[in-house]
Image 1: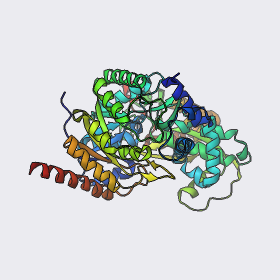
Image 2: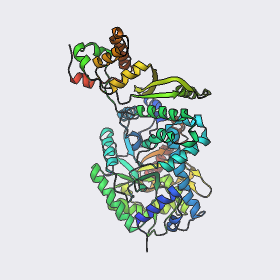
Image 3: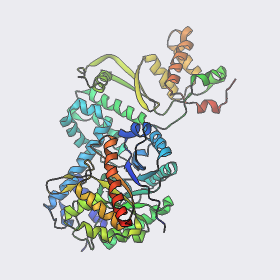
Image 4: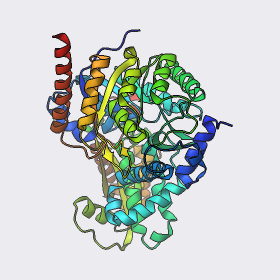
Length: 267
Length: 278
């Protein structure tokens, strides 16, 4: 009996993913080489193509690990997380989480952090567009109404907290220089990732700015931010510190304009 | 049934060339974009595409429609494709006569189908659904292959010709794919070309390939080879002037090198049609 198209595709898929031999029965006698050889082209291309997707998205991680170690890790990832999306850009999204439980790297937490940093930068790269508030616009707003408005941050912005000297490793790899030895930091490092123009960026934050950003990303207003900073320490300079953070975020183009102008708080 | 206008000689739009294209004025008549690369929420890819679109005609070429898959059509994907098409206003939309996945897994390759009546009906029905959804005729491209199926009932070229006729769609004839598959399966590339209906062909792809142990592999990482140029000349004689592009996806050279290669396509075309006019 002739196999159905669905059976053929199902067996072909199993041959690619698991090396099942059943599919060879569907292959006609080849003009060149053997059936296994022809099928091998597809099997090899699958692993190579998906490894390339990972390599493109985690360029510095590949550099850090070297091609052999990266390829071994990639094959394990490919087996555990087959692509489920027609767009290859989604395939690599689970890698940082996958590395949390990838035993060969369990004593190298900087590897997982490096993947998390590259993922955040990639996500910022093609995050949705939104008009950012600028300082000239800010000057036209009614300060009282503005202070009470919930702030909205650009979707490209995200926060990371690292325990290792991963940002130093990233910077060295980016400059194509030898990365420093990984080590645990004395205190956690707070990082802000975002897109400015078309470029993905990151910078280090102090603990207070990190906390302020986190509450504003969750929709706090400027006045709430001031109150939180005052509660934390030095209440007399809290507003000034908050204004400094806000100015930096506006200059980085990550405070959205639309929710603010929608409330029409102009003077 | 009026074919879309001949766009001339184009290249695939690749990120490595964004700056050169926008800062200069390369002698390229139009660009083909990989649809999936621009199905992103925002950022540089869409901004670059918008800028290129202002200066050049654009055609959208997908790799994940999976028109021959027995999995249900991916409506989320089709919706994203339609949204992108509204933004780009492409001269046409194309994808491949293949399947790329099944059972929720995308294998990200262009797998051939068995050339059977069952597969033919299935593909025709799916192309019709996609064309209805997008509100336009699409172009379907013949793929390279390394296997053929035990139960195929017809030749690839008869299958392709029948698909485009029954589905009332266009054909993107990939000349390199005809050559690669012809070598791998030892068939006559001329028989392939001769069997394709002239009125369906809206675009040619030209590309390079590499040599495997026994097979030619469709890698798009090399210049177009002499045999493919010869087959291109034959295709021009059969189909007349057709929109042509060079596809380069790996080992990507400077834009100027691709423009030089594209100029060879122009020269071959000019030679074919000046002789025809004489």
